[in-house]
Amino acid sequence: MTDEIRSTLEEDIERMIEEAARGTDRRLPTERELAVRFGVTRHAVRQALERLETRGALWRHVGRGTFRGRRSETDAWAEGASANCSPRNIHDARRMLEPSIASLAAVNASAAQIAEIEAACRRCAAARNMDAYEVFDEGFHRAVAAACGNPLAIELFETVNRARKEIVWGAMRRAILQPERRAHFSAEHRLIAEAIARRDPQEAWQAVMTHMATISQAYDALRPGEPFIL
Image 1 (cartoon, helix red, strand yellow):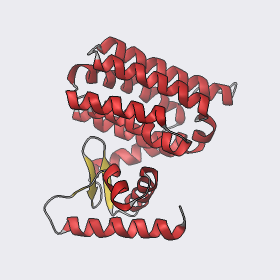
Image 2 (cartoon, helix red, strand yellow; image 1 turned 90 degrees about the horizontal axis):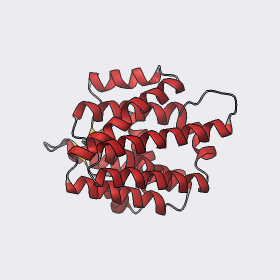
Image 3 (cartoon, one colour; image 1 turned 180 degrees about the horizontal axis):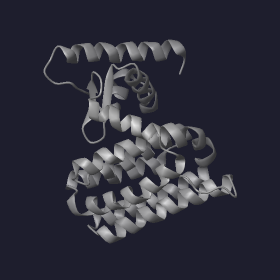
């Protein structure tokens, strides 16, 4: 995306934020809706939203949406906590949290949420490049988190996910997300989605644990001799 297009997209979104400020609902359209409205990719929308969030124009919350204005003090605390984490801390947190979230989703997800998890899984598998896969991969894990039915667990997921993107994933994604690995990760996503759709919490838990182990192995293959961190 050129600087001119990027600037125009941000200006368009900012105008939408100003319109929202005049109403009672602080929520903005979803990334998918913004991408369709402005004729750009969701990845481009996400980049614009991240820059606007950095400037304090908006904030985002998994399972709830994107909102105008700055984060609350609680959200700001979570952001600061993630900044002080090591990559190993992030890995350990993901292994503690995400399998249990998937297990809860298998019990609590609505039919519509299961359909969204399955759709997100298909989008990952169909991604034609790394940038698209990155967006759809996060969308898949967010869909699972949103379906768990526990607001606190969703908030914890968002905190860990933010740290993963800022501390680990940005530097690692080009090495990790090669086509063969994307295909393998997508196959594991499918197992997670199938377990949730079957309402099998134990299988959902195990499928995510297997996925975490695979990501760790991918990192080990790139950096032999160093402890796994993803």
